[in-house]
Length: 192
Image 1: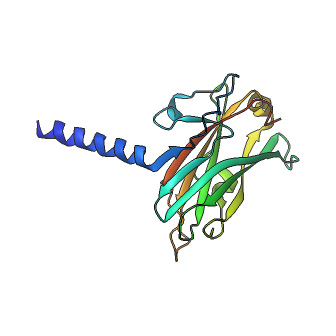
Image 2: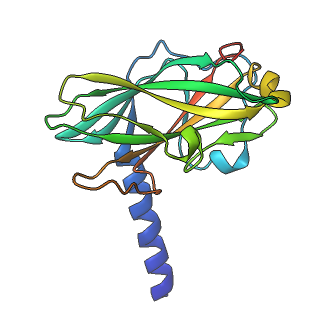
């Protein structure tokens, strides 16, 4: 009986944390793409799938910021059989104190194959913003390496998961446990 109460309380705390950490923009004109979008079972847990043009409000109070997908670039291959996809995510500090972030990008294609992720994207270091002051926007570069044979699958539509970690002052150690997790549906032919 006591164990059931503890489990129930733990679940309620987790749901409250999830509900309080992420809110979406109130723009009602945004719709999900009509094309097929992958839904791998490991990413369908609790983070909603947002349209590519959605802006998300993260954080609270003095440490609040907006995040949105800025752009994608397809780099010229430097290694045979591998393709690098550059991803820019824009962050605008809407709080009252400077914030510094690290984020990791992960792409999932329509067949469910996953590329990048925490500790993998950008050679394992993720995208790193500078110190973003209030009312300033910064777009940092992250990238994911995809086998050349799988690259065409991503042009049919994809899911971009971005895991944000707040960089703590006076340390270069980055937590591999994200503070925020956002999922965007990437429209077909954006990655082509």
